[in-house]
Length: 118
Image (tube, rainbow, N blue to C red; front, side, top):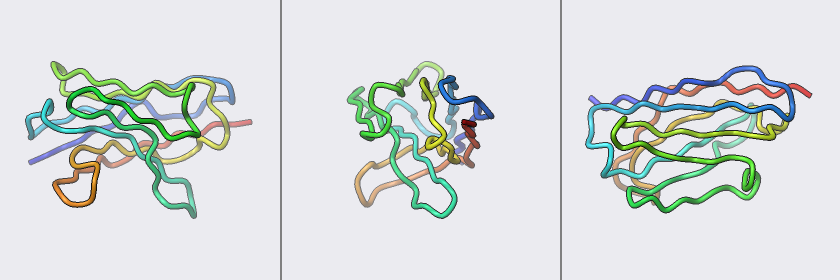
């Protein structure tokens, strides 16, 4: 059974930093792309950043220069370092594993709340 367990969310003031972690189990982690998505109330879920099995990285324009995605295949984990946080970053953040394009396997974590106060 595939499990993705996020941690690291919380409340932070604008300008602060948080680091999200996602631990995966149930699959050969190194074979899969990983990503972080977020969803704010009343909005669609959006891609924040992704990292392929080969290490290629992509960021949403809104987080470029502020967020960093990384993965540790030895620990079956993916991370999102978030710096210079803004109130607009307030969302539930979801860990994703699987195919980045339509089709293919897709797995989601339960989400972790990030709240940035102004």
